[in-house]
Image (cartoon, rainbow, N blue to C red; front, side, top):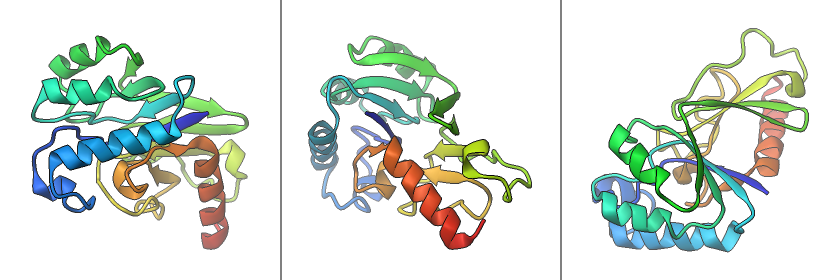
Length: 184
């Protein structure tokens, strides 16, 4: 299976991050993310993390990352410094790191980025399978369709998915339903 997520922010010791996610501490958040993740993802699964894996304590963040199941494909986020990128490269489960990525799944086309990006231009009348869907994070919204009025933008950050990665089939289904609901 293929999964997507972003903005893990392991070891980010600020209440404004872990509080809205329903946790009383960074440690509680870290443990819940790892448990949620490993209850869903298998070692054979591919997981695309669209930025911001860790913040504040790199050593603790790396310990958390190394506990995650799956093959991790990382898209750089605004908190993923050059130093952190080099640290990620040393994690046993990281197989790829990039700045952004075009991704195809069956007949569907995606652009993977940390920031929300416009990927469609006056093509609302075209079928979904010929349009480009942006998968992103960054804003910590709890609404996976927060930017859908601007284009085919779907938020995969943990905040919008109960602190769990979301699989590609669910994303496609969600986007189809939202397009039908909005009649776009």
